[in-house]
Image (cartoon, rainbow, N blue to C red; front, side, top):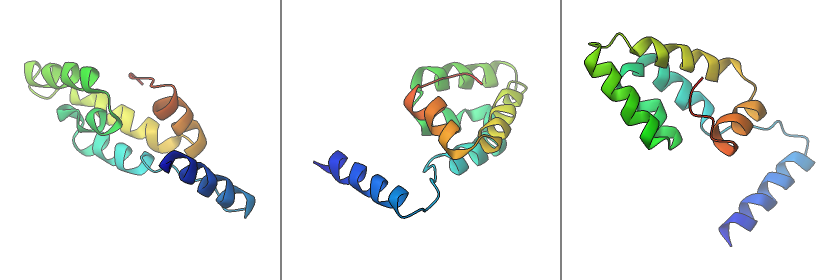
Amino acid sequence: MEINEKQENYNYNNNQGMPYRSEKKLAAGILGILLGSLAIHKFYLGYTKTGIIQLILGVVTCGAAGIVGFIEGIIYLTKSDEEFDRTYVQNQKEWF
C-alpha cells in the first residue's frame, strides 16, 4: 500500500511541474568521494556483494583501491537525477 502512495506522490509532484529529485544521489556521491576505500557508498545503494569485494580490495591495497570509490562518487554527482536512479537504483548497475 505504501508503494501506491509513493507512486501517487511521485505523479503528483511531476504534475505540479516540480523537478524530479533522486533520494540517494547526493549521499552516495559524497560517501564515494570521502569513504571510497571503505565502500560505504556501495552498501548505501544496496550492493552488498560488490561492497564486500571493494572493501577487501581496499584493505589488501592499503586504501589504494579507494580511487575507484572516488571516481564513482564523481560519476554519481555528475549524472542527472533521473539517469542516476535509472542506472544505479532501478537497473542495479554495480560498477561505474
